[in-house]
Image 1 (cartoon, helix red, strand yellow):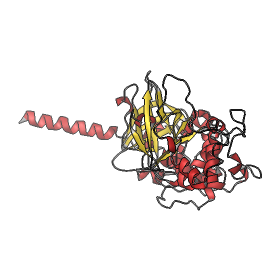
Image 2: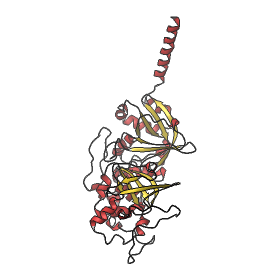
Image 3: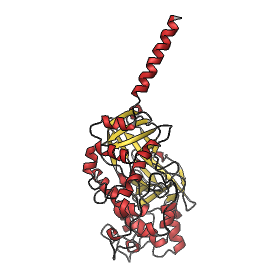
Image 4: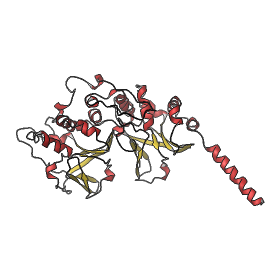
Length: 399
């Protein structure tokens, strides 16, 4: 009997100790000496943080140095709530349980379709490098390093990072302001009237040829009618599937919007779709992901396969002799981009920021995001990503 009472007493002591150890998020942040700026934001937006899912979350907390590197991060106060929502991951993501080489796609609490036209909320990618360093990938190709891991609080974990993460943006401003080697592809979408289709298709994977691929083929599309040209471009988008490079399995086929499949080939470290090699991977955008490729895909030659013994593959279109080709040639289709001659992105209209308590509404006008610059929140995104090598604009990648 005395033994039973002793065990009960020990159990009670353990429960009390666990209860005492379960600090609130505010208390945990206060214990960390280098999180004063982020702690101030948590205090300012306390209603949001008090209403986090009971199932547990993971809070990405930039340290004070991250905010110093991202000068201008607070240029648009209305954009801050969107960024804070993107910085809360669903579930307790314990980084110490990862092994070198592991990678995870983790949903966040940001689920407004203007910024997250994907299932289960906008995503971040978490990767443990071979040497054990953990990197979080966010919008505009930003990669931030985790410097403080698995700090517990009463509703989850805090992960401290050394740079500011960036909310993914719509396709058009992502290309115009960040992935400028894709302007020919974007211009082709404008010419074909497919910008909204590519930017608003949910859960999309877009294989976007870089400018040199189009320069090699200058004039090859001149003889196509509108329907033929649109079909070629639709061969570059896979709807209903956000496919990271690691998801592309060798010898698999992908169903495109052109209703003709793409074939995947993996060889050592290279990944090909038909004969186009992926040269930059996993670029997050509002409605999915972009994989940059080195060749334009030909829907009429869907059975081609790469010669993996060669460092470069031949184009699958025939260039016309009447138009200059090669890297020295003008970048085609850029004349179709709006505002390139008469206005700058800094003069463009600015969208309204999004509150933390607003879950709905796409907020897109039919053409607005396609024709305007980065806007207030978009401007925040790039300054916030400055420490990650994305310079010049701001904090939250919205447009």
